[in-house]
View: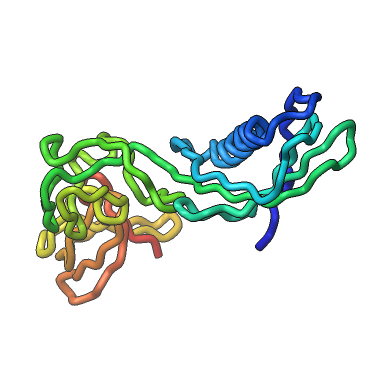
Length: 228
């Protein structure tokens, strides 16, 4: 497993400490190191179950350097390498491990949501949940969900994922829509039958009266734009 660049945490500890005091100081350094590494994910980081292998009683040191893996899986135990130094010299090396847990606010379905349901404020709540991994698929804000349409079933009590919802359809299958086709300076308007539901910015197929299949992007007003 690759190792991350060490981050030095300076501790003003010059006299020798008891084993308990030294372990507490090193544990604090480990917590600060791991929280600093994960702070850009915007989640609450909890570091616990810290274990150290090695005797640190009676050791005088003024710096703690910690190495951690490049990739860390939340919920799992993270292997760490700790180096104690004094005046630029190494006085002790030891191995350690800690568990990192991530918590974030996520939008949760209050009831089971079925395909094509339009999500309202009464259907959701926001809860602080432990998340496994840096899951950017989870929705954290109600504003991102209200008014959206369910694309895949969502069980009540489960966090809502971005790929389970979508914008409301502006076109239904079977609707007759305006198609604007362009090629350079040439622009043609025609009518066609939508072959599927579609939302603004999405792509659908439509059939003209002559049977030709067109593929294009929908606008907010339900027109289909085709570029040749």
